[in-house]
Figure 1 (cartoon, rainbow, N blue to C red):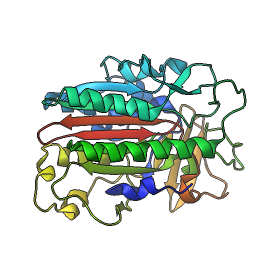
Figure 2: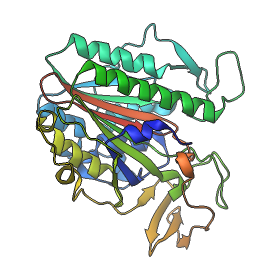
Figure 3: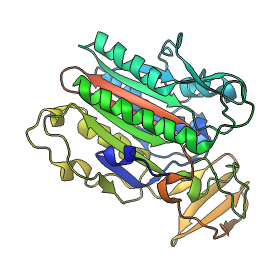
Figure 4: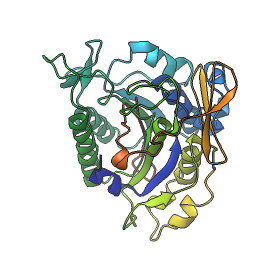
Length: 340
């Protein structure tokens, strides 16, 4: 679906590869963004210290925070984030937050605008500190339903509400005057449409229609904000490009400059070939066509069935991770990873 939210970003990655079609691995990949894209197996092995994006920010004086709109228990998601992503911060207090949805396991999915506003209130109380916050949200997750209703809630209604809330949060963030960099990175699409390999809703094979996701960056509190349409990054990109953008912005100088060199900021970002992997499937692009290998077998062409991402990203963003770094004086970084 199309939504004005996407036109409000400063930078949009048009060919961003999530590298996976599942939540846990996507979160780990974002949290280890500083070392690019390892294999699926290596995600669950110790990485070099310099690979952990939030640890690198901590060394620069940023305090880590963790927010989620759910309890993180299903599938051991929170455990994976801590053990494999290096995120050890205490989960932000969720008491009193309004419940917007119920997950398929009956656990609450809290209202995202309320969660984000609680973060903003906390930042205003800690005005002198710099922080980096990882925010994971899942209102678009398959099986979510409204309280008192057993049927899965309509995807379009949930997507509209989520994008409306993110847009409203952007407005409040701008009004606050705080210097913040927000990065929205989808984990993967929701597989709303099936193909010859798997029916709708299945993501065992990380096909391009699922892993080619929209990622965006927005700066707040700038003396010279970006004007006009978002800057499109058309090269094949992934998490290493996000890490590089954070590096280029982390000193905070662009927030106070009279004129920002946007071309310099966005040029020559690291490119990453589109390789996507789950535990039993790998998908690559070769000579412009996708190929798949299942369970370590032979490579075969992925059937050519509507590989283009539908207009408005209707492939479906299921969950979101948001990392927020903030500095009252000059620096803030916010990363939001959206997907399932």
